[in-house]
Image (cartoon, rainbow, N blue to C red; front, side):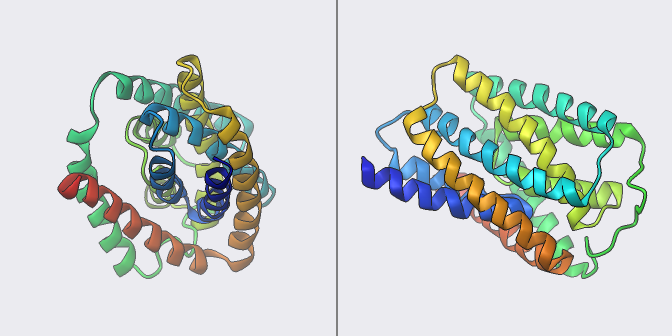
Length: 253
């Protein structure tokens, strides 16, 4: 068991690193958890992995918020909606299968990958210097992707980044800052639900949380230092990874 925890901690560090840069750390952490903890139920594995995801996102968010200032009213609105939506999504996951949604998401991600790859200036520069926009647009993003994170999960952080860029005109750094605080709320919604159901393995979740947090700190500083071009490249890699993961679920699993 000690070897398993050490391996999961190493994986959690790299998941936190990637997640801080552009989201999608779950693509590394979740499959590894399901493989290495195969004697536990899926709910226990997913519930336990939400703890390191939260800590890594927390420290990444703190770093990004030093660079991008988000008004308190917007912060409260976005996180409240995302929390409720994620909790609802996780609750639905305990009642029904999410398999019917995965082919739809697969098609959407193919379109996203093509769009991002062909549009060379995507997310490199902001079209919204003031970070102002109709509040309902941001609320809809948090509602839809908050539910997605609780119900399906893979690539939710990357989809948040994409939505903030394409619909609100942010660059990658601005979008990342907003995505991280929303992701904190979605993780918390799922953690509370799984915690109430007693589905968290705390002896595994805590050491992974420390390593994921370290990855989050390093990844967020790397993203800010390297800038939008670097984040765009990692974003494309993560979207392609999400495609492979969902493709496996749809066609092979």
